[in-house]
Image 1 (tube, rainbow, N blue to C red):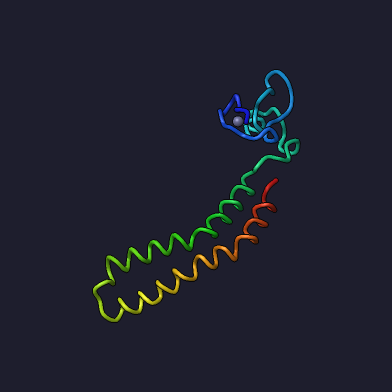
Image 2: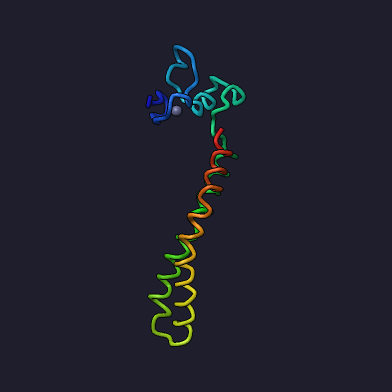
Length: 120
Ligand SMILES: [Zn+2]
């Protein structure tokens, strides 16, 4: 993968603008920032809206794992010793722990479809 001469980032070849001289080996984002191309000329550019949408999709996909870790940490540190709340939250946590991987794999294809839709 070539390296952008401006931001030193590594991208695939299709993320670079074409041209010689100052436009040689400049990625689409740096090309727009430096005024070498307009955003219309680089359809491969991940603009801010696409970046936010992709970040949201990834965060939504992985947020259940995050809440699972938070839940187990809270249970270990707070509810472990309490009789009623400890047992009730333990049941909820076990159900969530069993449910999360199933949901993660069932939602995989729709997540991949969404990421493909959000790829310029
Ligand atoms: Zn760059």
